[in-house]
Amino acid sequence: MVRYRFRTLQQSLFAYYSAVFIIFSLIVAGLLYVFLASDIRNRSEEQQKQLGVSIVGNLDQEVVKMNNFSMNIVYSNLVKEHFSHYLSPAEDSEQTLGSDPAFYKDTTTLIDVILAIISSSNTAKQANIYDVNGKMLGAGSFNGQMSVDLTQRPWYEETWERSGWRVIRLLDGGSLPMPTEEGKSGNPYISLTRVYKDGNYVSQGVVEILQDAGTLFQHLNEVQGGHDDLRIYVMDERNTLLYPFASDDRELIENSAYVVERVRNGDEASGTMQEISDPYGNSKQMMTYTTSQETGWTVVVMQSKQSLFANLNRMALLFMGATLGTLMLILLLSYLISKRVTLPLHRLQRIIQKTGVHDLTTGEDSGQLFKLDRPGSIREMDELNDTFIRLNQQLVQSFQDMIAIKSQETDARLLALQSQMNPHFLYNNITNISIMAEEGMNGQIVAFCGHIASMLRYISTPNKNGVPLSKEIDYCERYLECMKIRFEDDLVYEFHIPDAMKDIQVPMLLIQPLLENVMKYGLGDTPPWRIHIIGELDTRAKAWQITVEDNGPGMEPEALSAIQQYMKKSQEWERMPELEMGGMGLRNIWIRLKLWYGPAARIHIVNKLSGGVSITIGGSIRKEHRSIHDVDV
Image (cartoon, rainbow, N blue to C red):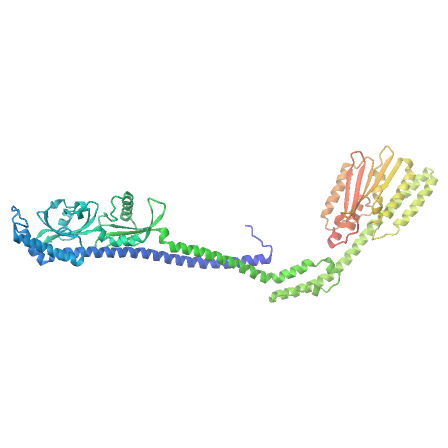
């Protein structure tokens, strides 16, 4: 597992502070949201449940009124007296209101009694009393008598089976025994029937109370009128839909059938909210149903989830906004706190970054150099600052001592490298004089010795600060003059050095070993042997370079590759290699260039296509200030 590492202390503190505060805030916000969401959900569920209970109570109240009305008729002595006279005529005699004054009196008295009860409570539209033979006496919207086929009434069998207990049915207006416009088709009625018995508990007929369904369910219409997304369904104990009663609305019929099926197969208990899918839409519906203990009716209340939990949705948006604002505030506070804590460290860091090697070597008081202007109010930071000041006082002293030691070591190594040239040079030239003496070249020996004397004076005065390039070129010219005395016209050389380069400071004996290398390895089988010494100056880059070319056979590939690998490997040196006495040539030159110019040192060796070798060395126009890194490389 890869562990992320912060780049700065401020980032670390900011991340940790933010993480702690954010986690704590999210936990608190989450718990609060769960509590409030549960409370709102419970309130919404309770609200829907109470609505169902309220509707059930209202319907129970209306049904109880109808039931009390029927009971008043059944137990009214006045009704019993006149109804018994109404039933007394023989079955084979046809009796009308106009043929028998007594019959007329009993009939009108019954109608008046029933109308008195209706007008006092407004509990029904119509009350009908049937005898066992189908004779009906009605009061309300229809006042009078008529004969009906009692067995064809929808409630007949169930009413007789219950033998005095009430039966409630939804009837279409077209099936009512009314010769009036009240009984038109499509106008539903609620019918409450029960068997009528005499004093000996013998069934005499049926009492029917009729109430207009629109009047009975008026409260439901009012409740739904202010809520477009609210749906209310009422079913009886036979799961017959009582409300809504728009039988010509196909979608309503299909939707109500779906609700009836859900209630019939529902696993949830009455009064428990459950979520269902709208079969004719993609919206979710919340449903609660309540069953009346009085009537056995089931009232189903449905409302869209989005509307019912609108407050919850608004609260969720509010919480999201508040949480986002809180997180932004936490991030801001975490940033300010982390910045406040690390401010002294940043100030100390800026002081250190502005402090260079020059500041450490000037001898300035390090206590003032690293002292914070405003350390801050954190005691640990003040102690860190004081400790750092003491540490840097020791660092300044140690740095100055090390610079002195390194400077002495570098000078000693340069002189040691330079000293390798002297015996090597003498050895080669004494050998040349011996050869010339054997060949009887006395005049040339005299001139040769003159050049040798001048050259010895040059190399016998070591200068660790280098020499002007003009003196090094003069030394090289005397060396080539000595070689020309020996080889005469077989050796041709040319110097092309710009005058602007003559005053550049270079290490002693930097170019002559290249010429000596040419004389040793660069002379071909067929003279003349040509040597070109070319100088170039780049004032814009403040750099110089000198190229030595010959027309010899070139370097062996193995030798060229070896010296190139050596120079490439030198880039990884932590310290210069140990000096080897007699280690002349290109490696010696490269080490001295690195010691003198550091990263600005340059050497390039290549075999020319036309034959011979081209060696280019170079460095900066002025000697660079050597840092610790430069000295160690």
